[in-house]
Amino acid sequence: MQGQTTCTGYHQSGPDDPECVLPRIEPDLPCFSSSDLIAGTRVHLITFGCTYNHGDTGKIAAVLKEQGCVIVSSPSAADAVVVNTCTVVASTERRVIRTIRALTGVRVYVTGCMAVVQPKAILEACPSAVLIHPWTIQAAYRAHGLVGAGGSHIVQLASGCTGSCRYCITKKARGEIVSVPRDEVVREVVAISGAGHMEVQLSAQDVSAWGMDHGASLGELLEDIASLPGDFTIRLGMMNPRTLIPRIDEVIRALSHPKFFSFFHIPIQSGSDSVLNAMGRGYNMGEIRELLTRIRSIVPAVTIATDIIVGFPGETDQDFSMTVSALRELRFSKVNITRYSWRPGVLGERTGEPPDRVKKDRSRLLGKTAEEVYHCINAPLVGKEIPVLVTEHLRPGSVMARTQNYLAVVLPGTYPVGYRGTALITGENVFYFTGNLHEATPHA
Image (cartoon, rainbow, N blue to C red; front, side):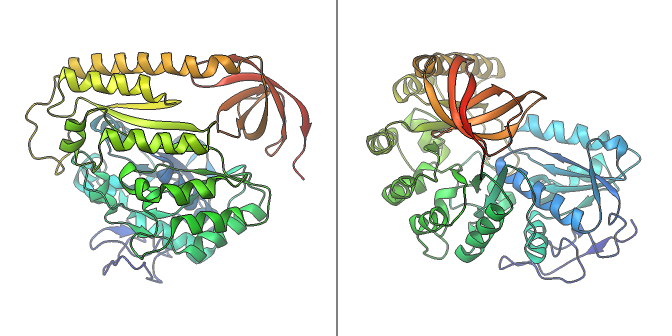
């Protein structure tokens, strides 16, 4: 492909090759060069996976716009397509491959976790694809100092993690924790607040691991962000209980600031100590109960979300029953349920993996249990008036707003992002509320 460059000498301290627009990646993976034909063209962006991946895509969009590209809404209107991949489970990997195979008549660029851990699968699906290492995205964005417009903005605190979970291929793609320096995080928050962003989403593979690679205090970082001027609200991203437990007091202190949503995303993954040990999670359910009790004793109205994996090798009916009981006991406001999916190079032995039909049955039962819990939590809020912040435009004539504890409320109207007011909650629909906004005041 014309303009394709191979960059070598990748290092964790940060890429710096001036020949690359999205500079320096691992040996033999090509990247955009300053002469690449993508500059000044129409580009469509496709993103799979987590909030962190969406943060990478936002940075790609900003860099491409700086190069004179126009971001278009469909592959058919594009000269080039950038696919930001996820391979956390096999079903997502298959969707990514189908998407890449279907791209014809355009130049294809692929980044994200699959570009690192499964490049052969990508190139088999599209031999002309250009692979971009995720590290290069950060470097290009940092070099330009770009900030996009909009109501919400993802601030990436770190790449990688400190864990060694026996189901996770993301660690192979992202590596050990590499924290973004405190001053750089603060500068980005200042910039996005100045650009009118109302919601700051702090993201990482494990937010509570930030700073562990250089002995920095997460609590001090959060307090520094909260003390910045500007009318914005901060949402904490996913935090592994193993790294959160020793830091919970400093995190809770930071969350006492009104600029933080009262929200935690704490993936427990299972309610069985036996399964947690097999997964290599590094904590037990007794510690989870103590952690949630500690949080709720100080932040009573907090919303806590979690993730659960069903069907991990060795999970028995009794183990699964413990997980169901844990959901009822711990009353999570949102539960992301994933059926275990073996990933290449992560877990050598698959002995004891339940059949697919068992995984499906457990997943359905767990989902039903979670919805029962949601209803118990949500029903008492119907008919109440709750302060909200409009954070997103939905389809014409409706907007999404968030309460202080990050509950989603869909409202009729055309209010601008940043509108604050009081919503009368009129209904609950499992995953969100409906309501009507009044006593609204526009963002200054």
